[in-house]
Structures are given as C-alpha cells and as structure tokens.
Length: 342
Picture 1 (tube, one colour):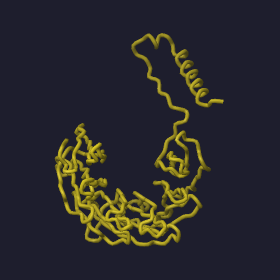
Picture 2 (cartoon, one colour):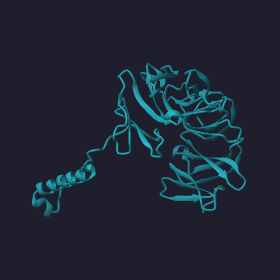
Picture 3 (tube, one colour):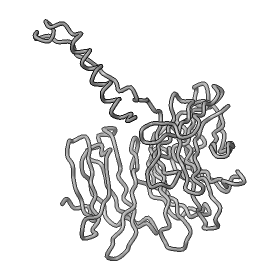
Picture 4 (cartoon, helix red, strand yellow):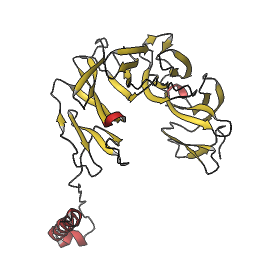
C-alpha cells in the first residue's frame, strides 16, 4: 500500500474536520482565531549531522534528541538502527557525526567533569580530557565544540581531532588529538580563547593534513601559550601538533569564522577569515582577511557590514572565487578574492 497517498488522504480529512468544526460565525467574522498545526512526523533535535554511512550517495541523518537520545535515521526520519538512550549520569550529548572508514558514527558527552567521544560501532567510550570547577558555578561546563575523525598522517589509522571549549571555568581550552584505535592521546595544544571552528586539509601536498582552528574572544581571563581570551585568533597546526602559525584577529566579543579559498590560476591556497563582531567597544564594521594558508601572512583585508553571521565561498563558471557575506545591516555582498565588491 502507498503510505504517502494514505498519509495525504488522512491529513486532508483532518483539515476538513477542523474546518467543519469551526463555527460559521468565526469564518465569516473579522476576528478569526488562528489555528496552529504540527506535522505528525516532526521531531525536535538538539543536534543533527548529515552523513552517508551506508555509501549509497544519499546522506542519512544522525541526531541527538532530548539531550540523552542518539538516533540515526533516513531522510524521512525512519530509524535505521536501534535508538540509543544514555543514562542520566551523562550530562548532555552535544555533538554527533560519522566517519567514512567502515561507515562509523560517533557522539560526545560529559560524565563527572570529564569529556568523552563515543564510538557507536562497536560501542566503546574514548576519554578526551577533564576539567576543574573554578568559575563559581557548580560543575565544569565544558563541551566538545568540533570534532572530526580522519587520517592525519596518511598511515591508514584514524585520529579523532577534538576542539574543547569551556566558558566560566576557563581551562582547558584547546585541541586534543586521539588515536581512534588505541584511544590514547597523541598530542594536545592549549590556548586562551574559546575554540569554535575546525577545518582540516592538506595544504602543501605532502600527504599530511594541516588543522585550522577558529576561536571566540570571550574575555574572562584565560591565558595559555602566550595567547589571551581577550582576543580572537586563527591557529594552523601541522599533523604532528606543531604550531605552523597563529594570527591574532579581533578583540573582545569577536568570532573568527573560516573557509578555504584558492586562486585557481596560481593554485595558491588561502584562508578566508570573517571576523564576526558585535557592538562591543563601538565596533562599526566587521573585518575580513585573506591569509596565505602556508604562513598566515595577510594577503588582503577589508571591512564590510555588521555582525556578518553568514558567509559562503563558491567558484563561478570561469573558476574564479566568489565570496558571499550577509549581516544584520540587511545587505548581501558578493566579493572577489581581493575582497572587492562585485
């Protein structure tokens, strides 16, 4: 039987009954009551990540619901494997996703002031780090802000690259890289600001991947490795944890949002940095930087708009980079790689 046809017929009947049930005086009068409907298959997700884990070229949806429920579904929200409910000792599942090798899935959570990443196939827990409650609030309030599972050093073994952020409790903030098979910490690097964005790519064609990290300047007193959370930064790490370069971007209350950028004529690899600011400190415009991906040097910079929360990089029919930005000044701007308005 065609489930879609029957569903449409059922919805039509429900709507028809609702209309018939409304008094005619309401339908004819000026002051009609509003009617709110909710689709019967609608679900609320705390976090959702698309990932094709059965290699059929169609993304499935990995979701976290109710802060303790982990559920992989197809795009019609039908469960593909058993839904997993975590016990109440775990505080807030906060990120989930998949990795291509063997079509695996993962999620992250906190237990007893320690952070873990959970390998859903097979079920195993991998310790990341722990913290200390020092901010005047009960409980360490850290979370994994970004995570990617990949082969950094081209040795056929996977690593889990985790960004860890804390707010009032300050420490630790930084990047933690774990061996996915042995569960051991490979390396870590701590810094002052709150980490927010993670991009991974081989930028120098040596079959080893570099790691790009963006941050938020929340300015509540954390200092590590000569960096302060009074400022936002961009960090570039080599696969082995050595710092390739870092660049201070903005001051208090600014985010650094990142995208890869490439000049397809010269094949130069670059980093687009969007400084998403706020009105703090009488900031007038957001700043935009194009950095050389190899050394972090500024190629060009400009200022446009306010609170540019949206941006995208694409390439036109002539393979030229185009940058779209949009902010709270209700203006959509299209820029070239030199940051000139097109």
